[in-house]
Image (tube, rainbow, N blue to C red; front, top):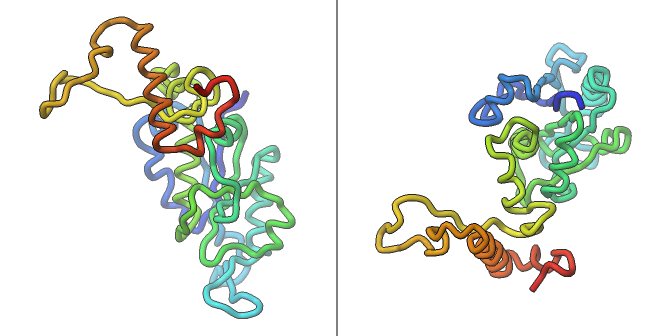
Amino acid sequence: MSVFSTTILTLFPEMFPGPLGYSLAGKALKNNLWNLETLQIRDFSTDKHQTVDDTPYGGGAGMVMRPDVLDRAIAAAKTRAPEATLVYFTPRGVPLTQKIVHDLAQKQLILLCGRFEGVDERVLETHKPLEINISDVVLSGGEIAAFVLLDACVRLLPGVMGAEDSLAEESFALSGDFSGLLEYPHYTKPPIWNGRSVPEVLLSGNHAAIRKWRIQEAERLTKDLRSDLWARRPMGIKE
């Protein structure tokens, strides 16, 4: 498979790589385990003011990103990556999940970062992007959402995580004993802190007992904190 590659369509290319230039994602970027390119949407405007938006038909507050400008920007990105999946961040999109992240981490991406009141609907009708909602909140633009998606994707790439086995036991794992669960609690030194002790089983050296405890704790936390996740677990795994 080719290197994971992303093209960002944005009015603020200087925002990138931003936080993705640090820690695991940043190291992987420097080591060419993935690559990132930005395209300035204003470069595809045709007037001297580089206009990318206009007032909405029908009236109302705010401005809407123009379809002609966006169409040229998307076409330029697709010329560079014809097989890439176009993603648009919007509150009406499908909720971002770990399964979607796993799927997208195996593809080349073009991320359209909207601004203002959003993009002209005809752009979405024409290019049919995957519309994604990272949370039920409204952001000022798609760039922050792009950081979230890319960070989640990059950490799944081979060679990025120092201990890749940990992916199987973290929150929202897709298979195994921890599938669909929140992650179990973690503890480190000192063994007693502020009068609180580390659970004895974690100090026992009994790996079977430790794994059983971790599964039970993951199940307890999921049932207590995310009953929606617990209800969706596959049959035969629940207690």
